[in-house]
Length: 126
Image (cartoon, rainbow, N blue to C red; front, side):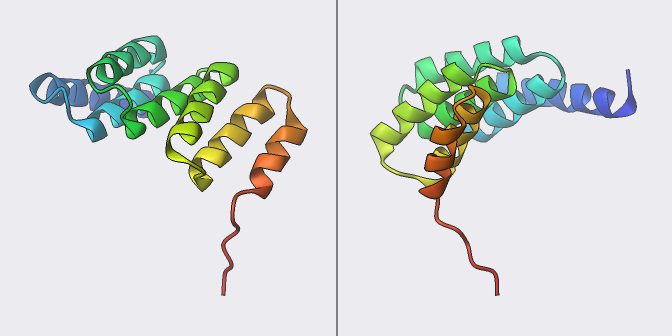
């Protein structure tokens, strides 16, 4: 195990301990999901996230994290569904549009991805 992998695993274990004490802590849930995927424990991370979503249905931060987790785990179709539902519930959002475009690109739907990206406002640098 590389030192980076060991560092991720150690951080994840610490976060899981904190989550045991504070299971409703959304930032900890999201970070533990991301670290779980990096540590090769994506299925476990997604299950934990699903439990949190069941306890707080409709929580946008958790749903967005689920979409990102599915995308990272190579499930773009399921991720796209999550992002589409969030967009329909919350309205247009540049981050959600970008994430949906990312999912569409991985699905092989490049034209749709480009169309979604066209709807994301650009930021002008001075």
